[in-house]
Each structure stands twice: as C-alpha cells, then as structure tokens.
Image 1 (cartoon, helix red, strand yellow):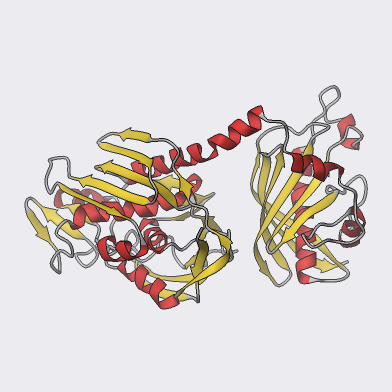
Image 2: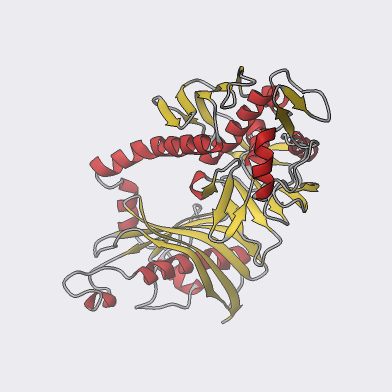
Length: 449
C-alpha cells in the first residue's frame, strides 16, 4: 500500500480570477497526514478554512464552489485535479480572494507549482476507496456510471446540445498519464453562451488566453489546440478534480457521457454513501464495538502511557473543571494534532433532574463543553504550559444530530486545525456507538490560571 503524500515546501502563483477578474495570489503549503486538502481564505478575519469535501459543495453551475457558512471558494476543480492527478493527499491552499487564479484555463500552472515544490511521502498509509458495486447516474443530458476496477480509469464522451465537436477519449489516471494526457486541456465555451455569462458576471476574467471559444464550426484560441480532442480531455480533467472531493483516491472505472459539475459531484456523493454503507450495516446489526466497552471500564492511570492515554488524576492536573462540570473521564488517545476522550454518561448526572424529568437527555451545550475541554487538554499538553487555563472563545458550525441518554458512552474526538501562539482552533465530534451525535468547530485561548 502506498504512503500518503504532501509537498516538500511552499509554492505560489498569482493570476486573474475567472469570476471577479481581480488579481489573486495562491500558495500551496505542506500539511500533516490525514488532514486532507483545505482552502484557507487569508483575506478574511481568522483565516477560515474550507475542507475540500463533497459535503461542502454549494454550487455546481459551470464550476464547482465550496462553502462553509458565508465563506466561499469558487472554481476549485482545476486546482483539485492537479493535486489528485499527482496523488497529493494533504495540502493547504491559501488564497487572498474567493477563487483560485484561472491560469490558462487548464491545470498546467498548478502542475508547475507542484513540480516546483516537490512531492514527499508521509508516514501514514493511503487508503484508496475500491468501488464495490456499479453506480449509475442520469441528470439531464449527463449520464455517468462507475464500475469496480483495480485502478482509476475514465472513459468519456463530450458534445454540445447540437452534437457539435463530439469527442471520445479513455485513459488510466496515473501521475504520468495525468500530466501528459489531461493536465493541459483548457476550459472551453460556446460563443452563444458568452452573452449570458457576461451579463451574470460569471467570466469577468475570461479571455482567449484562458479559454477556448467555439463559434459555429470555428475554434477561437490564441494558440493551436493542445490535443486533437482537447474538449473531452478537459471534461475528464474536471471529473478528476470533482471526484477528489470524496476525500480518498478511487479505484474504479468511470464511463461518462456529457459530464457536468453537477453530475460529477452527485457521483461523488453516491460514492460517499456507498463507502459508509458497510459501516452503517455493522452499526445496525452488530453489538457495540469492544474497544468502546474497554474504554468505558478501563482503570484510570496516574500518568499517560505511550498512546497518549490519560487517567482522571492526570486530567484534573491540566483542567480546572471539577464536578459537576468536568465533562471528560479519560483520554484514550493523543497523537499529533488529534485527541480522543470519553465521558461515561450516568443517571447520576445532576442535570438529569431537570433535563428532562421522565425523559433524561444530556444537554447539547454540555456536549459542546466536552469538546472544548478535550481540545483544551491537547493544547495544554502540546504547548506544555504550566499554570495555564484554556478559555472557550467561540463555536461555529454547531450541529446536534441525536439525543444522548444515561448509560451512553460519549466518545469525544478533536482534531486541532490551527495552533498559533496561545490560540487554538479545532474540529470536534461527539459519538455514541460510532455514530456522530454532535459536532462543532471551536476556538479557545490559553490564559494564566
């Protein structure tokens, strides 16, 4: 099995945004294992990040847009295609605008950034998703099917509504074939579409230097076509970028007819559903996993062990919280920027007397507090700051998905996404029996005790 990969060093590129027509600066940065691909808006307060995951797709009209709350990044598919084509698993993409530079309309400039930075393997294993059964999709004129395969392959047919410039191409997707066969295929549009795009402000930065225009049977471009079938190859480039939003490499053969960003992203969603289907079945029909049970009854220890586990005696040395407001009983794992803790929810919790009589439910805000406390433990251990307290500053994207009852074992998982000075940010989830019951992005700060 191959290792995960990131970049050896930072690499930057500046250009024009397709939508805004404004100058855009973009930088690729190395990222730790298992962190995935993230867009970071450095032009906004707090430098918010959006994970390149299909659940964050908000728009697919002519391009793919990611959003988290009010924060958006447009036209991400070409950048994502370059990273996926070379097999880059973990990277931070910094932008000082709401879209990457369009370059020449292909992924060529982004490939140059990757080549300049260099690719390095990481310690964690890469785990491709092997398609288990065919998935068929039909959306308007778009038809897509993916079949199980030993590698990643795309077979594609492209044409406009009138059947002009019908093209067909098929290839395996490997780093060498990606670079040679797909990466330089430019975006294109038909002349009759340009008026609509201009009126709607969709191509303020569009020129013949970053797109090919088709008028009747003529091809308008500043240079000869780079491939005899450049249009279908660009459609395949988009497929590579959009399907990378699954968050894992794919082993499957895609057959696409008139693909679109909407169809590509919907196929990614259906792949994500297929990917978690066995897990859902296991959770439905199997007893609770033995690991959770072991964690619930594990004897506390005075000091942490090699896995980063901490007993209650060590936790109270780090956190100022005490009964009835200590929301973590044990830390079961602490490694790098990740931590897992547990809270055994018992009927003896004081809040069950009023929340609610005859129908006891753990308050959602206390699950949020548990996330913050576990994150605080990680920050305090990471910085090794004596006589400090982690103060909870804010919570964003908070979601409560199902109730937590007495007798449940609450597993709290937190991934630190940023540590700068004494301020930390993290993404936390609470689970019961492997199912997410609540989640939030939290921010906190260390202050003197």
